[in-house]
Length: 341
View 1 (cartoon, one colour):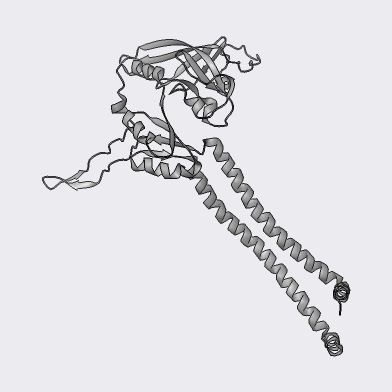
View 2 (view 1 turned 180 degrees about the vertical axis):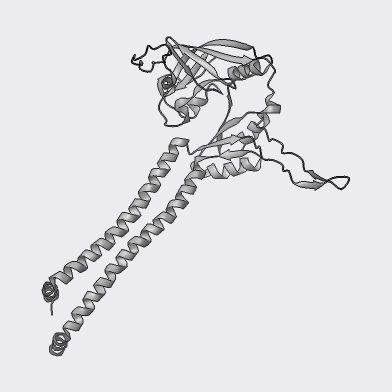
């Protein structure tokens, strides 16, 4: 019997039970499609979640904070038979020496301390008013982090600020008449902002400090924290905080509240974060969040694949049933064909 005869015979046999053959084929198609669709859905959700994490921060960056959890309050015996508490937690501050230690770690390409203006500030521009948080950074940090400029330049100098693209949405016109349409957000690029910072004495008397700051650049949209920040030089923010507190800030004693560390390669991020944690600091990186997402969606894909596999198993049972019934219904014909060769 030639291969052509085998093909013709197979097609004739399928044609005898068209309904059964059709249902079996549909079962195989549904089972296969279920596996492909469900596993593909899991992969798609995983990639989408990982992409969203990318907006939370660059995957090659590590955020470092002082460790507020060093020490413990374990109960210890005290003299006289009473109980007592252990030594209170001591802060592991991020000092200038700490920055040098972190910068010396293999794979670290940059260490950028930040400080935040401790006072709430009122920002005025023309008929607009707004509020915003001011962050102090090194003059070249924004460029070295790879941020793009929507307008102007991102290098900071004394008397200038760089703002995020959404800062303008914090402004409003306070003197609108009832029913008057609010104006669109102002274009702040190149404009001079009047910044009023307040502090209060022990007697409750308000003391104001007024600054005039020129907007040197606007950061292109990042869909992250940079969109809503106002950046000044770290030196100026430190001086304003010293004015607010009425004393000098000693970085070797009080440290920095926040540091951004950049790493050469994504594969090194978690290892370097562990090394920084071993130095006594708290760390966070979007890369660790991505790992958690991948672990979660791996379980998701296994569940989806299992559901699709059940559909495929049902289709396989249908094929086996069809083949078995076809053989049992044609035992005489098969025996005759075997007899005649």
